[in-house]
Length: 283
Image (spheres, rainbow, N blue to C red):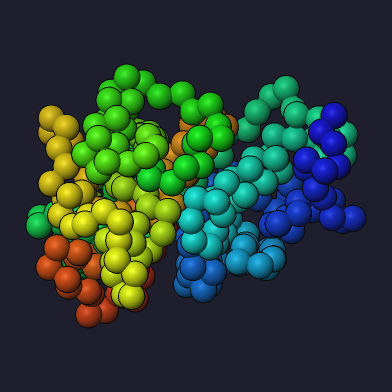
C-alpha cells in the first residue's frame, strides 16, 4: 500500500497537484507549458466536460469529434513535468481507493505542443520541428534509474566532455509511432532540454554565463551525423519519464527564435496556432 505521505490525495479523491480524478483523464493527452495555451487548443473542441486549475496546472478534457482528449499545462521545466507525469500515471495505473499499483497498466499518449529556439542555420524561425530524441541538461535523471542504450550513453558522455559539464546529461528517444503520425510534414531534429532560460541557454542580461559562447558550442556539437537542432526546457523529461513509466511521448516544437542570427518570430502566436491546428487534424 502506498502511504498517504507518498501519494497525496484530496478528500474528494483527486491527486494533490493536478486536482484530477481518474475519470478526468483521456488516453491521449496534449501537454503545453503555458497555462493560457490550454484554451487556445480547447476552443477547437466540440465540448468540454471538465475544467480544473491548480497552480500552473490547467486541465481541460473534452471531445473533438469522436475523439476524447485531455489538454494540460505543465508550467516551465522538467521538475514540473515530473509532477505532471507522475500524477497522471497514478490516475490510470494506481487503485487510489486501495492505494495499490494495478497489475494491468494503461499506456497513455503524450503529445507536447511547445515553443523552441533554433540552434542550426537550416532550422528557420516559424518552422515546426518534431523531436526524434532529446538530451537533458537538467539533473532530474540523477534521481531515477533511466535505462539507456549504448549510443545514448555515448552521446551524453560526448556532450559532457564537449561542454566541460560537472555532470553527465541523459539522452532518450521519443515514440517512433507518434513520430510517424505527427512528424512527416515537419522537420525532424534532436532537442536539447535546458534547466533554465537565461545562462543555461547562453543568454546574458546582468550575469555572465559560466560556459562562454554556449550557443555556438551547442550548434557545433557533432557525434557522427547527430547534431542538436533546437533547445527548450521540457522535452527530455517527457521522453525519459514516459520510457520508464511505459507511456508514449512526442515533442512538437514551434520554432519562434533563432539563437545564431538573434532573430525572433514576427508573429509567434500564428506559428503556435498553426502547430495546434496541425496536431488536432492528426490526433
